[in-house]
Image: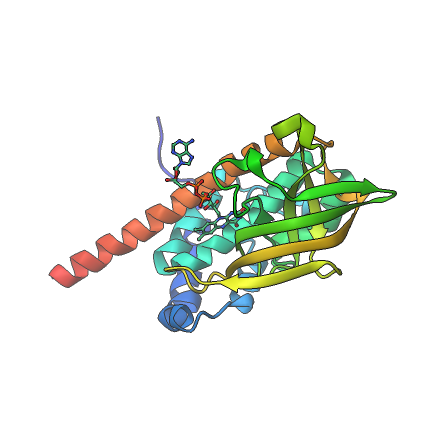
Length: 264
Ligand SMILES: Cc1cc2nc3c(=O)[nH]c(=O)nc-3n(C[C@H](O)[C@H](O)[C@H](O)COP(=O)(O)OP(=O)(O)OC[C@H]3O[C@@H](n4cnc5c(N)ncnc54)[C@H](O)[C@@H]3O)c2cc1C
């Protein structure tokens, strides 16, 4: 079996390493200390095509594949772990839309997500629904040509800064996990409030709470069918775990390099 990377993958890896060392590295410690959200870097990563690896060219991606995505994520995390979170926040929603969204949703949201123009996020977790996703309480009630969302999501990466969100909410409580649905929503609409939260680390990755109070989401923004949200959520988490693992590898490499450098 040949484990060598193709020339194309080596080029993607080198581009990401060069970008991370030259553009992210010099201010990484300062950005972390000052809790700075680097929207400029998020955009540049989009311009360089980093979010487009698992998206076909027809939606603005480059189709390089999951290995390219993992290699790029590893290089970013090696220099600044917080910056790799954006790989997940842009790619996770885009990939979920690609797999389950209507053609209109794909055309509307995937290109701005992977270009880094619309800062994305995904909102699953609630104060009483972490590992147990099916315990979520946020509701989405169909009302004419829209759904009205009410509830609160917590520990959401990018909540303080996101332009759009992949949101999971209960449309039919009696169906338990089969009563959860997925939506894609523009967060710059009435009914959304945000609260920033602090974490122990990765301070340049904004974290927070999203609260929905009679937040109206157009019915056509439903992803898949009503009741398919739990299945979509589990699928999405499987995709984003790869990026988390690649990020952990990047951090481990950085730690090893620092230790070797210190020892010498
Ligand atoms: C930095 C950060 C970023 C995050 N970003 C996002 C985001 O972008 N979007 C989002 O939706 N969420 C996000 N989260 C939330 C994250 O997904 C949840 O923290 C996670 O799902 C765990 O939920 P919890 O914290 O409520 O822990 P709990 O579910 O309460 O789990 C606590 C502990 O109990 C264990 N446990 C739970 N259930 C069982 C069981 N049945 N049997 C045995 N052990 C069990 C768990 O393994 C864990 O060790 C983020 C969290 C952090 C810290």
